[in-house]
Structure formats: structure tokens, C-alpha cells
Image (cartoon, rainbow, N blue to C red; front, side, top):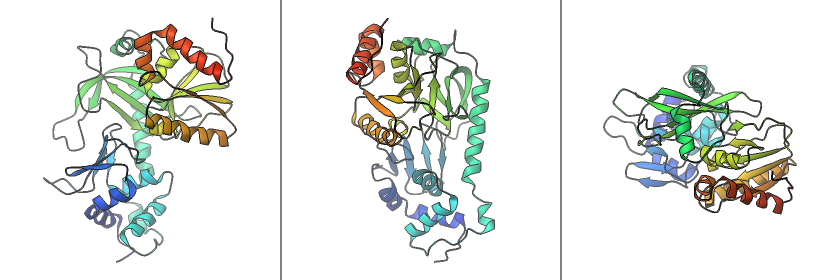
Length: 348
């Protein structure tokens, strides 16, 4: 094999071995018809990311889409995400190793200009910033109707609302994009820079989630980042949670705490703490994915000298607890768990 083949050639060769690729790099997934389904680009269990195994109806093998984030691409793009923060050269070396080629030489200039993952990511982040900037404050909008319908009363400038956000069902959807109302949430890094925008599509007639596949999607970069809510005073403690609604449920019961929502269990385990934090309370869901994410984050934080505490709901997640037991009962439960782990706080 020619180790200097173009990126397009390598992508085509990967596509012919799509199922073997999935078995090696996304072993937590499973085959469903002509697709391999997995949770996300990190390889977590789930089914929101679909990889086409065989070409059909003019659609290419090896193409994929994450219906939770709206991201899509070929298998080289997917491998880049799976490997984490590596260069294109390192990703191509892994591709060639998988295909049985010789070690990767320097990437020829003509191929360097054909695929630029960093440039594509920059464009997505720019689109996310533009979308969030186009939103308006949530008070008095359908977004607040949705949140209050789930018992949530903790809001903040990280949330905005837009009445007409583009909505496409999938990469291969032949219909033109629709527009639908959406709750927007600003994803930022530990220094406050916007890296993405989470969209929660809403049904204008009911004020609940839109009845579509994957009503929650992400534009931009989430890896290591979060949606942040401040209490108004600088604190050395931070509550880090999974989903937006579950994190805001904890914040509704504990308004004096700062919050960070990582949106998924996978990204909870990848959270990068901001400077100055001494202790992080991990508000996970009550399932295996939440438990594994909490353990992964705890190991990372303890290596940085940051103390950790676990907050676990009685039901599946904290929004279930909030709606079932009420704000006051949830507050008492959370404070009791914190006290048991060494935090004394006056419950006024």
C-alpha cells in the first residue's frame, strides 16, 4: 500500500472496513441493521451516534452523525474525536496502522489543505457564538415555561431563548431545515470563553420538549467544558452535574452554590475545573453511567488536589427528586449528604 495516499483515499478505505473500525474503536456500541450505534464520539454506551456500515441509496458507508450534538463527518473525523486532543498527523498515523500501512510519514501539503479538523471546529464554535448572541433573555418566554414546568426556578445569563432556530432531522434529511423555538445554553471553558451552544427544542403548543428525535443538541465544543451558573459571591465550592435540568434542579434547592452542567455523563467525567476551586460536589444521575463518570472525574480532581463529594438522587435524577418531593425536601436531602461528607452549612 502507498503510505502517501490522500486523506480522501484513506477515508474511502476506512469506509470499506466500517464494521471492523467500529468493533475496534467503539466496542461499547452495537449493530442495528446497517448502522453501528454508540453514545457519542468518546465511545460511551448509548445510541445517539449512528455510523453507516454499508453504502445504500447513494449514501456513503462510514458516514456518521451524532443526533445529540448535530455533528457529523467521515471516519477520519470520528477517529480524531475518539482519540481526543491529537494532531491530524497522529490521527492519520492511527488510520494507517489500522489499515495495515507503513508508519505515517510527513503529511503532504496538498492533503494538509484538504482536511482541517481545527478549522472545522473553529467554524462550529463561531456559529455557536452567533446563535447564542441572537437569543434573548429567557424571562417571559417559552423557555421559562418549560423550566418552571419541571419545577426549576434557577436561571441565569447562561440561558437565552430564540423563537426560530434552524432544525434538521439528520445529515441525510432531504427536506429543507425547519425552524423551531429553543432554549439556548452557553457552553464555556474554565476561563469563560464560549465554546458551544446547547439547544433544547420546545413545542410551542405545550411548553414541553419538542416531539422530535433528539430534541437536545449541541453546536460547538463541549469536551471538558460546561454551562455555568454563578450564585453572586465567589466560592471555593462548585456543584458539577450531568444534564442541564438536573443541575438546575440542584441549583433550585441550593441557590447559594455555583453550578456547572456538563450535559452528559461522558462529559461530566471529562470536566476541567476552573482556577481557585477547592472542592467539587459531583451531582450525578443514579445509574451506572453516572457512577462511572463520577469515579472518572473524582480520580482526575484528586490528582489535582481538589476535594470531592458525591450527591446522588433518590430517584433516577435530581429533576425527578425535585418534582416528586419538592424544593425544600430536596434541599434538606442535599445538605444532609454534604454534612455527612464534611461540609457544615447553615440552612436558613
